[in-house]
Image (cartoon, rainbow, N blue to C red; front, side, top):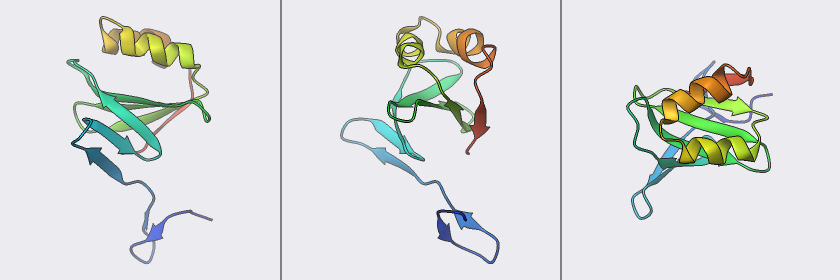
Length: 101
């Protein structure tokens, strides 16, 4: 069963992205994201209870990475290069992921 709003005979709306102008954050899917300065990454968020890292790229695509430790999220946020850290410590580390947008 899909948990979402049916918007057509075979189409469900399962993800809405919200932007909060007051604190300059996104909430996409179920994860609140913050903007970062990067040539590749636009915003990053983390759901502590579900251990989901959500990354929005500058091309508009959004990925969820699963079972990511909170330390990895903190190091990603603090990295000099978000893109390089993401590639080395998340993508190449083999975390399961899904493209949500």
